Length: 265
Ligand SMILES: [Zn+2]
Image 1 (cartoon, rainbow, N blue to C red):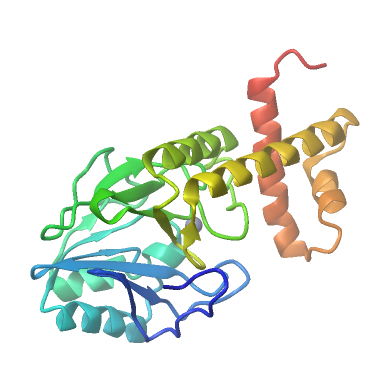
Image 2 (image 1 turned 135 degrees about the vertical axis):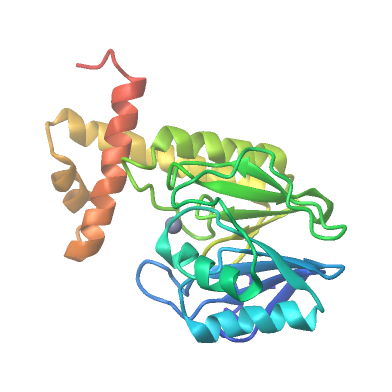
């Protein structure tokens, strides 16, 4: 297992984290993807689905193929947790290799709530978890006590809210739903970084952290500061590009404050 205190697997070296649940780390590490995108492959009884095939990199696609073939399986479906390119660019090339459909079928399409993706006896169903983006989903594997959370809940940090597509209200609702579906003996398998243990406690901690940030932003907004000024004040050491991302997250908070505290002056 790739835990918070262990080193990541090398791209090209698949890791079976539970029977039939494989992680392949994509070779696209950068400031936005942390160690890279996590591609998850579910295999059982000759059946396979690939969740978030990642960047369009032939070497990465070859590793995915090798995992599927070593399980004597075929890719039946390619599933995307959300539309971001670091998760979705390889969807078409991988689907073409296996003549498999992609779900959702169109860019920024939405996988319907409760869609079943059973792989052999491995039971998986989709849950809508918008917030990072508006089209976000997670995959719940109740028999394995696992949830593939995409970029909704990741270890170590609050995940990015891509306002205006993503909203803080959506994110908080999705975090709550994810905490409700799991127990602390479950494990979350995120779209980036190590796995999340004790997910209920973790989500509660992350929620309080986000609410503390809401209070900070509210205090600054009262002084009439712009989102750019608030971002620079809260993140004095960030470079220009990351500052723009921080600014988008602050705009998500300002939007949340507008929606939830209409009485403020
Ligand atoms: Zn993303």
